[in-house]
Image (cartoon, rainbow, N blue to C red):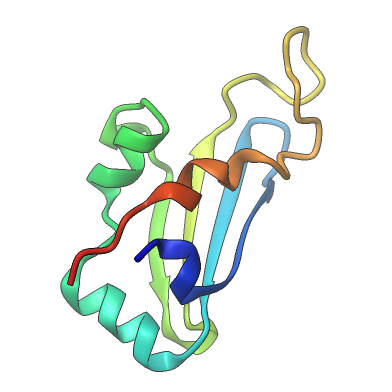
Length: 103
């Protein structure tokens, strides 16, 4: 199965002109707890998916009240700079759609 089959929402957005925030909100508390307990999504995996060093990840946090994971990373390009192709940061979640989950 894929991560997207467990998640109700996978989205990204600006967190200022220099950072992106990615939210994963699970369909149920059970799915959230399953991911957290089994460590199915880790800082290491996010670093690999976004081709960055683990220490570059600004925040990786499980948040039970929202049944979710919040990840904050540096933007590949500053918002609105030359070469930047996603002004709102709303397409940067796509790398997570192919994450396979093995139980």
